[in-house]
Image (cartoon, rainbow, N blue to C red; front, side, top):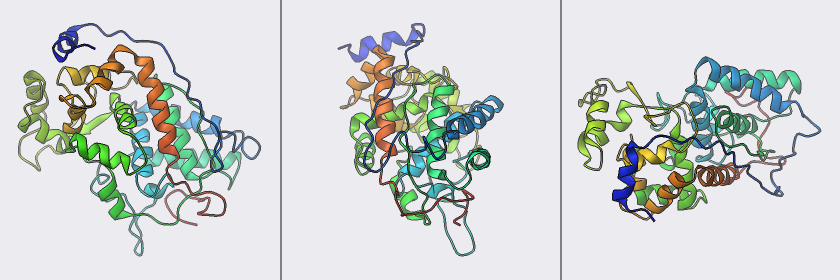
Amino acid sequence: MATRASAARKCSSGIILLLLLAAGTSSATAQLSTGFYSHSCPGVYDAVRSVTKAAIAREQRMGASILRLFFHDCFVQGCDASLLLDDTSSFQGEKMATPNNGSVRGFEVIDDIKTAVEKVCPGVVSCADILSIAARDSVVILGGPNWDVKLGRRDSTTASFSGANNNIPPPTSGLSNLTSLFAAQGLSQKDMVALSGAHTIGLARCTNFRAHVYNDTNIDGAFARTRQSACPRTSGSGDNNLAPLDLQTPTVFENNYYKNLVCKKGLLHSDQELFNGGSTDAQVQSYISSQSAFFADFVTGMIKMGDITPLTGSNGEIRKNCRRIN
């Protein structure tokens, strides 16, 4: 096991991209199945992939945004597309909750995917399943691992504003809070560290990393100053200014996120908590040593997250429009 000091010495070493894709395997459960649409809508995969690929080609950040939509959906009432519901005069959805307001994005892409899928097989595929396939495709398109997505979810007719505020880990989370919030969803600490690797792609707003770059001591000084230059100390000023979660390759899905952590260059307080002298340090080190190990564990975590309390059978509905109930 490399020491923290030796890990730090690796920070200046070159990046070696391992072109290994760990294929995730999963047995079908009574609830969800990888072959759910094999007869009713075999064209769903091409339809989702085509629109997702085009959206990422227009804006590479969109892959991370779609992946984040899936995460924020699954942590509230399970993977039921509740996050996609718009507010109405009589209905409060989850989009304006603190973790989502001004932050989650990509809803228009999901709308476009739904339109494409409806042309292939109308009224068959749920918005929840569309989001799960699009999240997988986003990872693959940006260089990450592939896996067979378990399907058969139906869409919720409700949402939970309070659930969104309480269940989704904030960027200020310490290791114990991260661990407990993931455990509440049936995900282990190992799953949590692997799924946090999703931050190897995408951007974060100044409001989410301001406290870390100004107040924390477990951060590289030069890195902190660089991030401060585009994120004023005063709240309300530059809140929506963006910085990459992975300063090296924010549009490539690989293991550089973990390499940044051992260099004390995690953008969010919650990121750096994964390598801060605690119980997860060794797992971070293992993903630096083996990108294929990270990919394999990430796939396991994504499949487990996709299994969180799905609506199946006659529960829920197949929404015609992902933004509103039928």
